[in-house]
Image 1: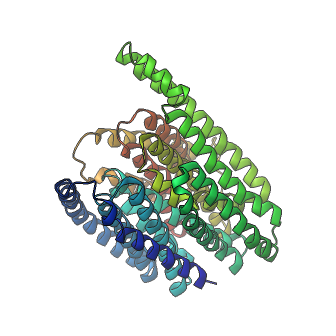
Image 2: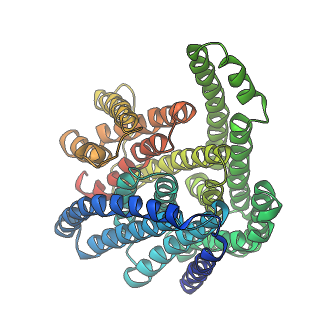
Image 3: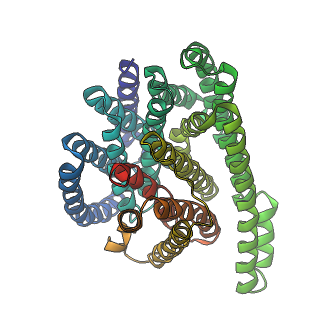
Length: 487
């Protein structure tokens, strides 16, 4: 069963390399001198920052080896390596090609390498606990990659989300069903998503919406037959499980439409902001803030409804399937990021929304893992440790947001503050226990989600909202990694 994901991932990588090979043929509009300047700037940045990242990666590699064993340490190293590779190639592609073509090449590279890393590691280890370390490796690099610019940050962020979503889906398959079918289903869904995206590239020139709709229909058709065959084997209703896949697609399409409505010059929100900006700068800021709040409301309602419906369909596994379905279109979403400013808003809204839903799945998996380990814990507000964790999670997220905003317009450099999403859950978990850690996770998810959308409406650069994505996702990955030592 593992052969299919491996074959599809290799096909995606070769397709990306084919696109990359043709990039120079269509990049004649860029001056050679302009390309040289951009390459030198990117190369200088990568050399400086990756030297620091290498030191941090080796430090965590040996710590994980000592604490969790050789499989987890190499899983971590593999995740970090693939994430660095994707970020590096994606950045170099951005200096070579027109916008759409470079986006497509980067997108299939991301999805192909992500699926290959997961499939190969599971093929050789069969160790899902070690695969969480694989996701942690991606998370570490993603935190630092957000110091980069343009496509660099979004590629690393979506690569991390993609890997962690598939891994947590596999982990839930084992926790809830102990069935190989339930473990492999996330890999099959990811494979179908890649194939659907590759096929749908023929629709790209017809427009971004038509290409996404085409990919959605192809993916929906493929998963119909897949889930029809597999759902009965894990004692789940075909209709309920398939509905969670369709729900993920609908959520993605809604996010795209609502983001486009609030970011495009064709619609009322941007026109209103343009009119108010003609008076004073203050009214412009207030108007932008108001529109950003309205935008957040619709996304929040959609995510809340998604959680309720998913649980009614097939419980926690349904929610995980819904998130993987959302990410099945991540390849084309990355391609959109390079087209225009309104498309960038779509990409960031998609990245924040998928990161939040994934973080919730991670938290519920954390809770389920505690139950499986014989520790049934309720995170009640009347418990002072839970409350402490909630406030600390929110406060640290605010601090991390301020740190990210302070980087705007500056030459970005890594610092120890960028490790806050990793350090905080370690300190709270080991010093105050599982209840405080659970509170921290909930606080960081809730506050991080609201802050990310608020900053998205105000930020002049792409990276600040993506910084906060790290505070939403990474603590939950760390919590799953250390859970055995807390009970």
